[in-house]
Image 1: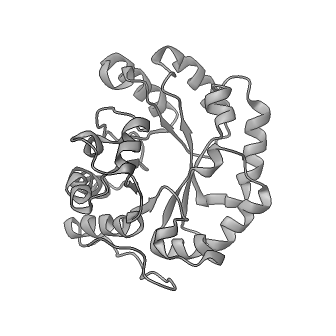
Image 2 (image 1 turned 60 degrees about the vertical axis):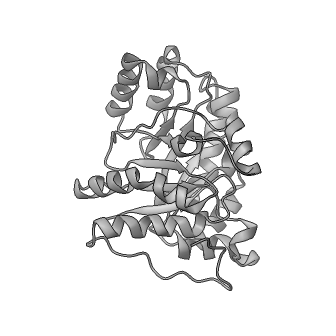
Length: 277
C-alpha cells in the first residue's frame, strides 16, 4: 500500500525547518509536495536538479504547468513554453509524479476539444492531472461525463480541490477571509479515474474543524488503497501554519482505518514545527 501526503509548499516560516535545506528537511516529514511555484515561472534546470538531489527517489512532485501555458496561452499555441518547461523539469525523473494542468475558471466545457488536443500532444512519459474550476463541470452532468470520458481515455486524473469545509460557515480569521475571496466554491468530487488519484483538501485555520472536515477523505483514501490504488493527498489550511503536521496526521488517520499501511518515517528537523494539537 502506498499513500503519499504533502502540502502546498515545502517552505513556510512557521514550520521551523532549516533555511539551508528546507526541501530536504520537508521531505523527511512528507513524501509529496505540490509544485505551485512553477505556475509563476519555469524554473532553471539547475534549480530542479537541486530539488531532485534533496529528495528520495520515491518522493512525489505534482508539478503545475506555467500560467503561460494554461491561463495566458489557454493550451493553444504554447509549444515553445511546453518544451522549455519539460526541459527544465526533466531532472526530476520519476519524482515528477504528474504534470498538473490547472485551468482557469473561464475554461468551459465548450473548450474540451482544446484540452483533448493538448493532452494528446504531450509526451507519454508523464502522467497528467487536470483541475477544472468552471462550475458547469460540477453542475452539468453531461459536461462532467464528457470530461471524465476524455481523461479516462488518456489515463489522466481529475484533481478535486475540496473547499467544502472552508465555505461551510463564515470565515473567522484574516487568512480565511482571504481564502473566501480566492478559492473556488465548487461541490466535492471524489471519483478516481486512474490508479493514482490526487486530492487537494482545504480545511480551516482551526485544527479541529480541519480534521473533522477530512473524515470523508480518510474513508475514501482507505477505500482507494484497498482497491490497489496509490493516492496522493495534499492538506491545506488558509494560513498553512499547521499544514506540515496536519499532513502527517491525515496519514495517521488513514492508517487507523487501515493498520497494514506502513507509517511515515520519523521526521528530521532542527526544531519541532508549529503544532496545534
